[in-house]
View (cartoon, rainbow, N blue to C red):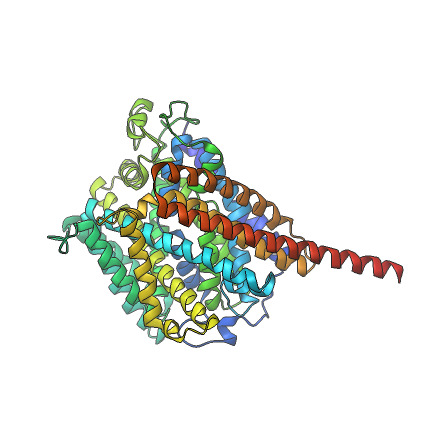
Length: 565
């Protein structure tokens, strides 16, 4: 089957989401108000609460939530076949992710920019806040550990990506200063920044860099992990305008160019799909498609991490409440478009010329992943645009690294927020200090990365299945908070309740399967984390269900009273 047909059908579904469904949800369900005073204005402090141009904020939000997950997840899930993977990406983006992300922004902006965990106290109850924040912290812990390992591996496997990845940070710092001081227009800065970034990609392709040796007792990948978390610690303490916003915005523009190259290459070259629509030659021990598909592809369909970012940093920068549709829903569709092209890149002749060759590349579940995307995508760009495969590989590897890096920046910052909130809640003043809280956050990430995977730091990838289920449980819990807010406001809640039930059911079922797998393999640390997530999320669900039933009873009582009168 031609990949052009698949691409056009997928894009048509995403367009329906943006032009029709998102407008309906924004106007009739969330009722976004352009005159509402957002926390960015009400609590403006120049550090975290900063009113931001919606295009710049979209760039920050999009690249923060995207990371490498909309590439890694689909590139793994294609093993079950490209049909179920693509269906979940399109349906999930339109009816799940966009509603979830826009809803998290709306809910947080209506509660003074509180994180989804903190605002659950107002919406559901005081006990829920502590339970919710435990799950949020664990998701952030896993996200940062996973992406730290992904970046380190990319630096080792593709040394041509090292120079442009670090050059992007320098470019972002300069742009941040120029924008903050109103010294140049956004459009001109964008053009200059993207041009410099792509020039650095060319330089990187000609000048690969690698570490000469690892730190004492550590290999080179583990040393990269240490360096990356040292950077993330510093970046997370800078004002959002200094690095986070400009870096994310430039990365967003870089992704737009990358997507243009990939989508254009498909339309020009029209490669045939060589991967099976449904794989009937799976290796023994392959996990079942249901429920594992729905936690393997998280970002690109729906992801709890998006709610953390939306309510943790993005809501504090929202200039107008109506911007939540563009920033939240459109960013979710951007992720879906990246997941869609990833699936095409790893399913066609650009990666494997024949079905037999594809099965050799994907001999087992978990094969392929980022490497398959870079290889398939680079060959696709070469066949479509004539750009050398070497430069195209550097471009795509840099895209992966920059996305994962911006997620780490935001993730460590959000972990700091949670630790500081715990310090305030339990009156432990010393952990409320920003430097101390950041050190604790980074320390926990390193403990998991090295503790679960040994001194080479492979723990980040070992926990990927656990991250998937925990992340989706959090997505369901976030949809639950939004649903309770809608019910209390006497608004229709089916648009969030239906996705909530589906996601929670699949995620809890997957978490149970993963728990038994960890038990059989003797991975007791991960088994304990899994158990904590399951028990905590169950308690939150019960608390929320109690509130929903109580609120429904009040509303029915009020209707009966009005009828009697």
